[in-house]
Structures are given as structure tokens and as C-alpha cells.
Length: 138
Image 1 (tube, helix red, strand yellow):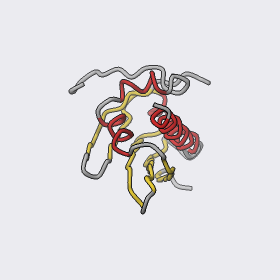
Image 2 (cartoon, rainbow, N blue to C red):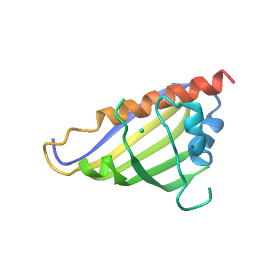
Image 3 (cartoon, rainbow, N blue to C red):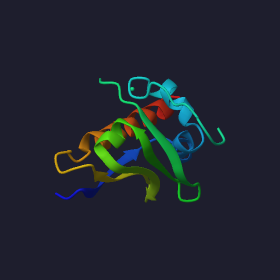
Image 4 (cartoon, helix red, strand yellow):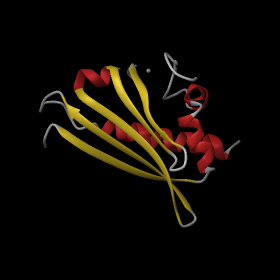
């Protein structure tokens, strides 16, 4: 495979798509309370509002409330040691009666020895399921 790539995951959710989008768009600082096994801290450094511990600093690159889309770009931490560029987009769509959470990870590896970021896509999928379970059980 080349240095650049894109991975996509789709997960159906049972909870409210608007609440789910709001969690990532307006309330990411609530994630450590909802999924403490996955996210230990979210700190806001600028703007309006760690198995093996990993530290990743991201910026929210784009928010589109109408399309229920949020894009994060990594700029510091473990990801940048392996990837020159790493962008994750979460998008919520309706397909009939189903609400789908679609994660898209676009990346550029530092070199050919770096693996594709399948583990990060799995992390995003697990995070989706955990946040959905939290919302359904509320």
C-alpha cells in the first residue's frame, strides 16, 4: 500500500442522531464521563468551549450541523509520530429508519513501515457503540 489512504466505518445507532452529533460537536468534554474506558480526558486549549495511554491533540477542523458532520485533525502526539497527516470525520446519516454513524479516517504515513490505522478505526467504531449505549440507557 502507499503512504496515503482512507478508511471508512459505518455503524448503526439506536439512539437519537442529534444527541450523538451534539456529543462530538458541542460537548466532547463529556466523553470522559460517558466512555472513561476509552477517553480519559478532553481539554480545550483554544476556541469556544489515554490499554496503552495515547496522547493526541486535535483541532476541530469543521462542523456542519446541518449535515451532522464533525472533522478533527491531529496536530500533536502519538499519531503524528506515525502519520504526517491524520484526519477523522464523523458523519451521521439517515438511511430509511436507520441512523448510521460513518467514520472516515484520512491519513499519510511517515514511511512504508507504519501500519494502516485499522486500530484507530476500530477505536472509533467502539466509541460509537459505547456512546450510543449510553444515550439509549439514559
